[in-house]
Every structure is written in C-alpha cells, then in structure tokens.
Length: 449
Ligand SMILES: [Ca+2]
Image (cartoon, rainbow, N blue to C red):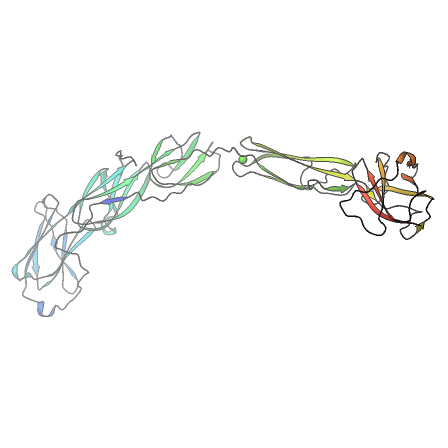
C-alpha cells in the first residue's frame, strides 16, 4: 500500500506576543558592579497569577558571586522578602520558568511584582470539536519533568518563557514547544480524522501493547502508526498520520498485470528442433501476481518439434483478480542445406538440358527430416549477373506439374527437373519456397550457356 505522508502544522500557539516593560535579558553574571554598587537593603518580590492572586512556591535568588536563595514566595500573598548586600540581579524561578530583574538597587527597599500568564492547552478535532486528553507541561527535570495540568482544555499559570507541552490521547502523545509572552496563551493540539474500510487493526503502545481493531472514523493524534489490513496476520504497514483527514482504505487494484514475452520473439522463425528457451515475465504493481502461466514456464524450451506457425501465450492474474493475456506467434521452419549435386554454383549448364534440382530439408542440427508435407515450389528468375531489386518478386517460370517435381521418401529428397529448353543464356537465381512453412531458401545462382 502506498504510504501517505502529509506535513501539516498542527500546533497553533496564540497570544504569545511579548509586551510590557520588564524585558528578559541574558544573565548579568558579574561580581563587580563598580560604581553601581550601593548600600544593602531589603528586596521584596511578589508572585501573582493573572488574577493577581498570590502564588506560592516561587524561588527568588539574588546574584552575589553566584545565585543565592533569597526565599520562597508564601502561600496566600505570593510574597517573599530578604536582604540583598548590593545592587544585583534578582531572579524568580517558578514551575520550570524564570524571570529576572537586572541590576536592582536594594537601597530603597524595592518591591518587585511579576504576574504569571494563563496558558490553556486544548485538544480539538480538525473541525474544532473539543476532545478530552491529558495536558502536561515540562517543569524541568528538577521538578519531575512533565507534570499533569489536567484534562483538556486545561490551564496552567506560567512565567513568560519557552516550555514544552504535551497532550496524551488514546494512549498516544504529541509534544510541542511554545513560547509564552505576557498575554494569555493557548496551545492547541489537533487530531486527524482517520477513515478506512474493511478490517483494519492498529498497534496501541503501553499500557495495551497490542493490536486493536480500528473503528472508522477515528480521531488520532498525528504521528507514525502501525496498521494491519485484512487480518492480524497481514504485513505491518507503518503510516504517518497527519493533516485534517486521512483515508486508510487500501487502494483498489483495477490494473491488470504486465506480461512481457521476450522469447519467443513475436513474428520470428526458429529452425526445427532448435533449442530455444522461453523468457517471459509477469509483474503487477498494486496487488501482486497471484498466478502466471505460460505455454511453457520461463526458462524451459519452447515447442520447435514440428514445423509450422505456433503461438505462445502467457496468462497472468493479480491478487485482485485482474487478468492479462499476451500471445506471440512464431514459425518453425525447416533447415535447408542447399541444392545438391549435380547443381554447382560454379558450373555452367547447357541450354535445352533438363537440370535436376535436388534438396533435402533438415532440422537445426542438419539431420535430414521427412518433409513430404513441405509443399515446395521452385522459383527461378533471370538476373544476367545483375541482382534484381530486393522488392522484385521472383518469377515462376515453370509449373511444378510439368517439371517432374517429386518427393523421394526413401531419401527424404525433393527433385525438380528444370526444363531449360527455350531459355536464354545468362545467370539465373533459384529459390525454393515451402507453402507449409512460408520459408524461401535461396537464391542459388546458376549459369545457362
Ligand atoms: Ca494489478
């Protein structure tokens, strides 16, 4: 089956534009602040959620030859205060995120306030129907990695920054990174509507770790899945699910197999008893070959045991029941070992004599064979040493019935007596044809004087 691969952005993060007047800057990891160093004081940090409710658990640090803990925001107020020896950077760490104030002068006992941002993780079908999955965000390894937010849609208050979010649905999961600014954000996961007909199974990992019957239509998180079509014993096909919808229905094979017959060559002639090995193939792209039968299997000898026209047929059927048949024709002809004595190419014959033309038909090995059914004819054309045009048909100058054409079955020899009386001097070409096989042997030149 054809693997379907779509690349579609499935994750939409909304409302992530950074605004406000507390830009996050790279750490100013400096021990010496020079002229900016002033007197010690107390810094107060307040961590509030988006509704200005105090958030506990925010760890606040100041920099003094390394980050040092100032304290942790308290339950209820979200507030923590602590002594800071000099102007320095202040950082709060909460739920895997960080926020930093640069070069805070403690002399005036400043109060620093930061609000978290509500981030809502949603799971929907491509057409916008909400689905209930488990939403997580990655709080970092120190806090235990991915922590459950709740069932989608689920909202978590987070400091601005970049986080990984995860949704689990139907024992599968998708992960996406999203950068959270200072306005409410939405992390949207979408499923793919997967359809299919016939018996389909898909593999479900832990905790099932097994094959489950696929019920169409099915909303699935994008990703790579293993499917089996037809039965649990069928081959596993890995398909990447993506996009808004995908149809897993196996393509219908309506294309017949391709049959190629290389040998026997269509329209060619082979000699009696010639060893010719069949060479043919049958292929099918979609469903594959179920059966392929030739007149003989490829690689085995074709029939050259008798002369005459032959057909060679291959019929192939694919696994969808489409059938293709190809037939080629070939002819098995006699071998011909030339005109026999008294004919000699270099010998001149006297006009008026009766010249016996004798021949035998053979097989491919040169063995004389019974050719009593050959229906031979002799054709003779005068050429006067000038070859006739190739397109010019030889002229039959003698009717076989008057020539004494006969077959000697004791020697399997044909004899034709050419009555040359009345012929003009010159060179003639002799051809021998067989109405049985269609072969034409010659020309054999002969000189009349
Ligand atoms: Ca096919």
